[in-house]
Length: 152
Image 1 (cartoon, one colour):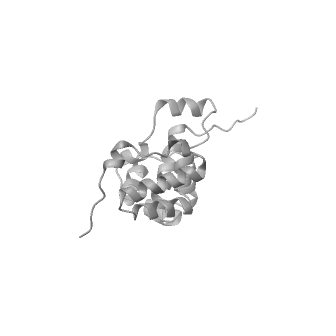
Image 2: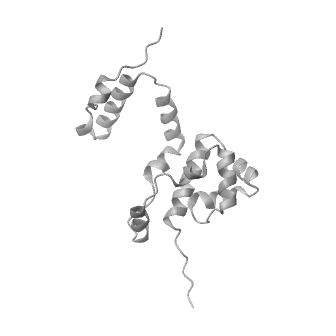
């Protein structure tokens, strides 16, 4: 009799990614989050990978500790993603994975520090050009006409 290991469900993976992203954005360690939730950091790792499902009560506790509503963990989910995971075409959310890295967090924090919309638009154009996405560099009409806040 062979035992096959069941793959994590797409929603469990998504919730885990969102948990990891928010924890990383706050600069909180897995150990510290585990302490708040009354679990080990290894269990937090399993939640973040989606290999273990997080219970409703732990999800509620995590939302309070991380300062987000429970709905935050489900933002961005859709039925097509679930179907793609179940058919083997979905390998994880690359954007969330990158944002949760040290570099991703540093880039996002730096960009949040740029308050001039025109500078952010030009920075986006530069990044797209460097990454080979230069075909979509032109800012939208709204961005061209939007005034940046003026400092007195």
